[in-house]
Length: 258
Image 1 (cartoon, rainbow, N blue to C red):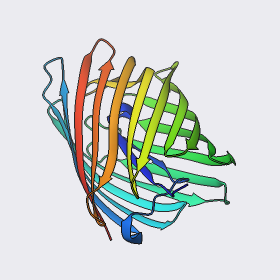
Image 2: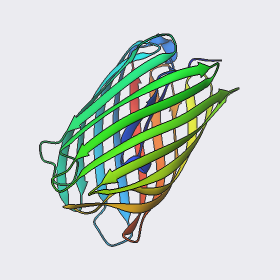
Image 3: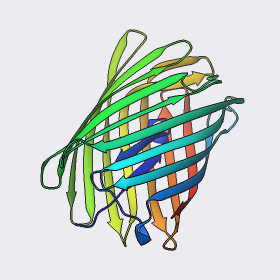
């Protein structure tokens, strides 16, 4: 099986960066440093001005299971600007066990979380079978959100499939959501994926209010290498955020590897 890297920024889970370093993908030419500039635009059905987001990401890949990422994000939601600085560290604890920690801070936090910290473990318990477990905490001005994640993932031929359960707690209320993910790998380091999720998630309904709401979302996303150094990343998302609004998002990014 080819080594593969999955590095997805998905609006399905509030633009959280998702990585699978078990299938690390050495990019064409064996480059270890990546720079990506991406732009995201979301249209809401309730007449709210479009959400916009621009992200600059720098990633250093040290080995198949080891990566360092830092990113700067500028967002505009509900007509308010926010900035965010985030980082991620993945490191192997053994040949089969990988640990990942990530966090972010928003100096403005008008809509975004003031602080976020997450940690997860990834274990290959059988050939091409992985289990992921993680915990996360987000602090807003008015509420704190705690979320766990338990996911089973399997790779076969040029495909992978995963199923996840995500319990969440906010304002003294506990709920959960479920997610299915399908990915197809082609060429040296290209992939296309489909994510479907349903359940209750933390949702911004106004600049100062974050509540648990029924969310149903579908996302099509992927990465395609145009040359040995340049790649295009993309994501199309549709999310029904309870009775508050439907959000349709388009994300495009250009990635350079050297």
